[in-house]
Image 1 (cartoon, helix red, strand yellow):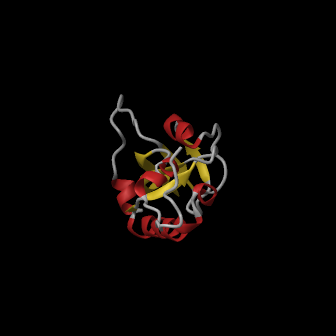
Image 2: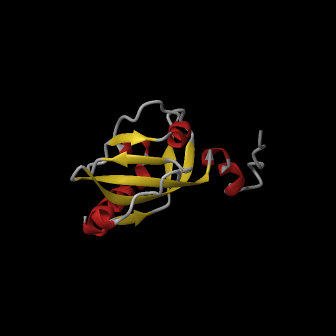
Image 3: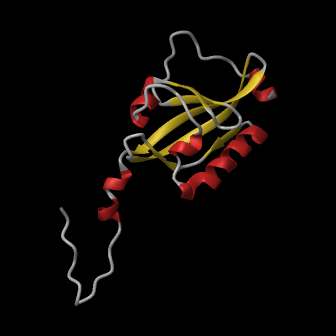
Length: 138
């Protein structure tokens, strides 16, 4: 909290061009900008982060919240699911922030790849046998 209290604000006129969100320490989404709204295909910030996280990544994301609370900052790489069912690969940096003497998590997000589930057939090879021919790609 001390590092958060000592940090400076963005200079006037500076814009943030990446997706961002503000969450409670428990993980409820309170606010996000237009870039994250477009990525997640959501108009209003609602729900908990687990709603957009594949089950295989929930423990890692939970640990990133714990690390941000304990150390003030945390960065991981993980998939996120938009409301239209598409999966994207992101690298969120969580920072512990102080708003009105209450602690929150500020998430600034780098989008590494969009719609990663559509490229899966190209990045993984399937086992082949002589009795089963190679599947044809559509």
